[in-house]
Figure 1: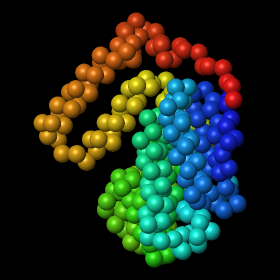
Figure 2 (figure 1 turned 180 degrees about the vertical axis):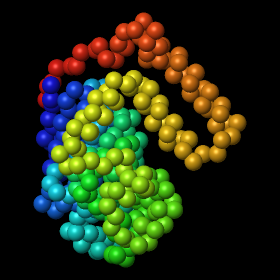
Figure 3 (figure 1 turned 30 degrees about the vertical axis):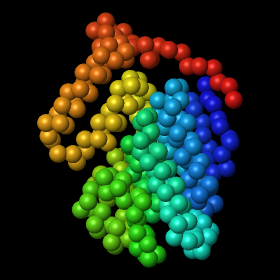
Length: 274
């Protein structure tokens, strides 16, 4: 059963069979974001992250482009901002990216078109990125006398520091094949197969323990690039002990041994209400 939320001006949000889809819905300006879209994305991912009926969140887009970065009208307005106003505005963008990155549910970027500038940050904060073959990618900020500062922690993690050195500084456009080679996206598919590829991955993810998935996301964020020290090893030892002793940890092992479905797969989906 599908539930649609139409309280947003820049987004479409729906939930069906434990999969939430957040669609950027400003196709007439290539889904460029402004302060309104930033606030709505923050709100949507905050709510979906705490919704027990949601186990996967897909970030998609309407129209030909996935996201062209910042809205030009918004950028014109920012030209007259004071330094303090620029700080506050940039912080809202940073908090939006952090909210998506730290969402306790798996997040999938379904990229149906070009990704430029700040749009690269939206892709980088998602756990998985799948793009169509015709999609192009570009970190174009330096062409405008700017720098991809706010998105940089996520983009550098996604493509690696060495690749980021080239594409931050050159503002070159690169295609989906190159994005796949860099590891910035995980898969590239033909246009007609994008929805099927995303749906197949979602179907796999919704079968997994929600608590274990949340723990895995913490592991990925906390351990990537961290030196392997005695303290880190102790933290991982505690982590496996905690998850083994948890309700879903015990249930998952017992279900496996008893050759049955775990209870998180047998609980019926709640009825839909606005």
